[in-house]
Amino acid sequence: MGIRDYLISSILFYMSWIIIPLFLEFLPAIGNVLVLLKNSMVNKESKELIYQPEITIIVPVYHSQETLRECIRSIYESDYENDRIYVMVVDNGGDLESFLAFQACQEEFSDLHMNWLTSKQGKSKALNLALFNSAGRYVIHIDSDGVLHPKAIKRVVTYFEQEQEVHCITGTILTNQEMIEQTSSFGLRLLRRMEFFEYAQAFLAGRNFEAEFNSIYTVSGAFSAFRKSTILKTRLYNTDTVCEDTQITFQIREWMKQRIGICENAYFFVDPIEDVNRLYTQRQRWQRGELEVTHMFEKERKQGAHTSAEKKRGTIITRVLFYDHTFAFPRMIWYFAILCLLFLNYPIKLVVGSVFLLYVISVITASLYYFCILLYLRKDKNIQRYYRKLWYMNGLYPIYNFAIFWFRFAGIINAINGDQVWKTQTLTQEKEQWKQIVAKDFTRILHVLKKIRKRGNREEE
Image (cartoon, rainbow, N blue to C red; front, top):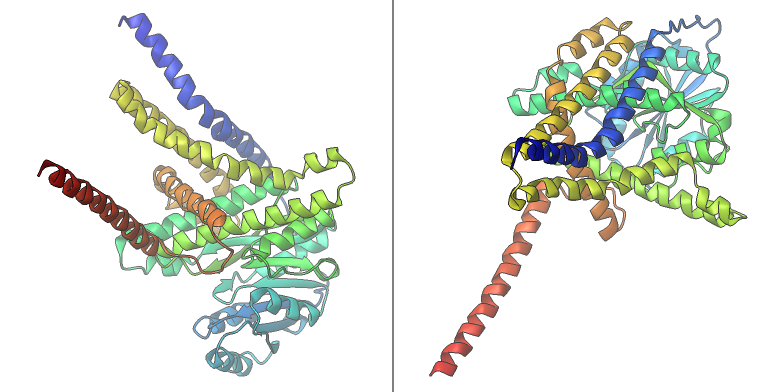
């Protein structure tokens, strides 16, 4: 092959294999970064609250005796006036230990007005029970296994007071830095740092960009806030999905046509991931929940549509989610196709070069988001300082994202094959199940071959 032919074939190859991820991921990322840079450079000075309205903070608990005290303490030590906060701790089927921990909190943090509610019918019904008993102008939900930034509550309320068109807010979820750095295992500590890096990108870049175009499709169940007058007009939390936070977001955004925002400087710190198995089940549950909620809303929308055009049109959020899930299958095929090229006499240098080029594009994309996030964190120096130290994660992030893609893809497959459940199999359990299936199938094959061999021996005799 001449130099001219080689160059032409190389150019055609790179165009075929690079153009899809280039147009689907890299170019949109450039547009996202430009929007984020514009927003981060705007000096958003929050006016001091003249009057602090009454609010309700709902804390669902389930075997939360080890984490509840720190969660309540973060509310108590916030810069919001304690006599304006009504804390509702609602048990969704836990044990006596959680209640004993709550009693200890009542004694220790006596300035807080706290009540205990019991609902043994799951988290969604527990949240609904608390909503019916809530008081004040705003309702904030936080998980019991995390802690609030001291300024988080006031920043959320200030955001609501200044942005009257916003009816629902998600805060920024980050993992606890101290717990990450106290991890003794190097591998687990690296995974936890990557999780922190991922959360920062997901909220400070992803949710911020979505908020710009009013396309946030899920508020974080770990830390979300609502105008009480708005959330009580919804159908409340749905018990038919494992992703109730996405479902309530769809109600406010799609049915009520209200705006959803992010208070990017209101932080809630959750415990870092325990291990890869936990990460695997978590991402599967999120993926399955998104599919369930999308299907649920699309079904109701089509039933309520009056014309065929309305049935076909859909909503921006459902289109985004369907796009995300639909393109998972071509991506999977594309990944395997790269390996197949080696068996089609494509030069190894060409195949490896294309993969490396995609990796470089991904690193550049992650780095662009990284610098945007540093700008967003400039008023919270401690968090910014920690995030700055994770600069090397830009090089590891594409590999992490590759693994997360397969975790999410497993969630799509399992959602097709099984009923919705809160607990899903871990990666270790699925590996063992896969080994058993392979061993069983292999045994069957050997059994059939053995029968064929016996029959052949008899015919020879």
